[in-house]
Amino acid sequence: MASLRDIKKEIDYTVNEVVYDCYLSLGFHADKHSEIIAIMQGAVDMRNNLMELVNNPAEKHNPSLVRKHYAYIRAQLVERTEELWGKLSEICKFE
Image (cartoon, rainbow, N blue to C red):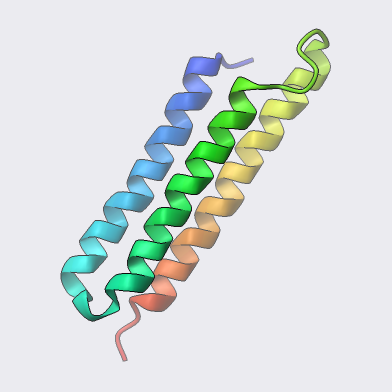
């Protein structure tokens, strides 16, 4: 089982990548500023929610449930990140 430190680093790294891509997109699509900022805010909210889940597992004394809890957090990280990148790619399409 990975340590809490590794899970937190994974969350931070992934969110930083989304935010970086948003900043980069702002340089190319300045006219879509508000939509891109909304995606960045969504990424920060996702980070805060996932960190809250990491720091407060429901059942601390049952290792099996804790592993399932952290697997759920990782699955949510992947799912939500793909959703944010999908939204960003839709906004940044050249027409």
